[in-house]
Length: 169
Image (tube, rainbow, N blue to C red; front, top):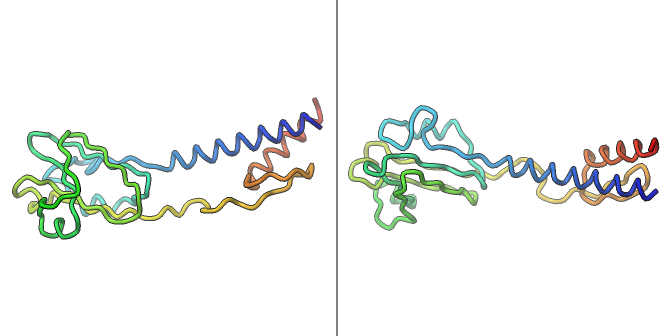
């Protein structure tokens, strides 16, 4: 009986680790403008954004020549007017990684004169993640009568298979 409980605990732990790995792997990193361009004056950013969906936890990277460009995060008014005055933040490394931490809209532009007016600006809409439950699943009971809190049916099946195989040991 003790071996079965250990097997169940191991199975639940493996399922939990796999679940966390899926969540961590769900975050995506994007290089703005890639694969056909970078942060430059030739890329169609409206087209680039339209082909992607951004979620909290994702990262966007602006890659560019520091001598030719910069990245300025602005509000909607600054974006519409191509103005970097009253900016939220400014980046000048040439390889700026920005975390998208919350649902909402973020606005970025190149602050060098004329660049934004030439199309070097991007609006990033960060949408809520729809994958996976937001609350813990209800407890599940194994064939042996053990309650597995929040493990879900997949973990229960793995646990039952392990416990069943323990009978042959």
